[in-house]
Length: 515
Image 1 (tube, rainbow, N blue to C red):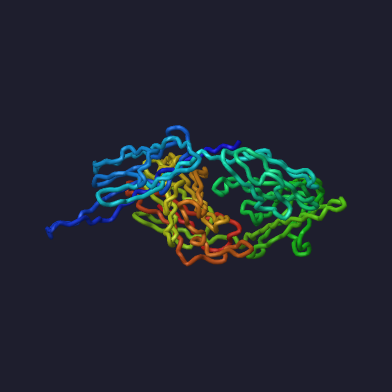
Image 2 (tube, one colour; image 1 turned 180 degrees about the vertical axis):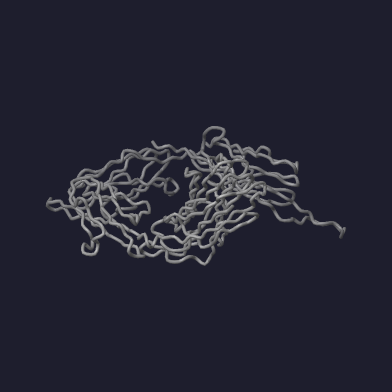
């Protein structure tokens, strides 16, 4: 049985400063309006499991106000306790804990929590605790090619459930067990398969008709499945060329050819026929004679002689940008930094390194995107520590987040880096940012449209051509800056570099030295 354990959402948020709040006035015209400064560090929602340890059943956040404050649930539920629920010390930041009791019912339960000071409700957030209902499965095996033997898997549940084929309906069906109460079985029937291995999905729904599980179903067939590139679309080859090795999982004989043999003379195969799983090795020539990106399409085909078996093909795409197209434009500067200094605008996606010589003082470095919302990826150096933060706020990367604070020797040379990437998923195009300290990876975060940091990638890049080269920038300016540097010492030998990032081949790049 699969685990039904849930984890709570991280509780740290942003302090919010409320505007001046008017209160009821007396007949005295000289009475001033009252201002309430209520601040809190809290999430918009929390999700807790039905049972667990005290820590697993609790959430903690912070509250501070110039006036007495209180925290209460709108439904006045008796399944949780707030401590402290009130406070009146304007100088104190209170740590507030909400502890939930175990939930023994099947259903989830929810409460809306209010944070109120004086007459002003500054924040409402949702507290949800899961019920004990579960719906799991086990015992899923591959269906035979001929489809003569039904496939049966077990359903493990404490509630009423239903099952439905939601992918592969043309060849897959439920012969028995389309619904049940508590534990049960689902029997599947498949038509004979004369072609490629095929995949379907059976979805399990709970008593409320909500989707709980997707059961992946596979029917045996011809398999020729190459490893997927990191971007999910094509393999990128450096301008210098070399060997490109792609692992292919197969269960039969197969061969490899070029889609356009006469035009694609810049790469060759070390071997063209295989039996079963193997490494496809491609020798790629150097490319330095053009400013374009060249593309190759590789065809993998089954070579079975078995009667009645349909041919199976799949494709691999490769791209190579030339050294000419990836050449950078470099600007060198030497200057003292006092206050704010901007390296430049129209920066491209890719890896940026800041080389910092020995210095005394504190420093902030911002990679900024002038758009709506305004976006910043920040480095902070203070007190021998490096720290990270973002705007909009990210629950994964914020000042003091676990694993993000690193020791930094300001008496030595240091290298601080960003890797700024475009990433696509089913919700759209987004920005991924990776942080590095002295080439050591720290953390990565993506604004994927499902978390609280929702920055679309087209803020950074307007669009990409089909061959992967960046065509043009969004009109919004993208800048890199060093901000609020202390005058205690000097920041020396700060260098911004843009590494070659295929397939991005155009744009302006900056190398800046700051003394």
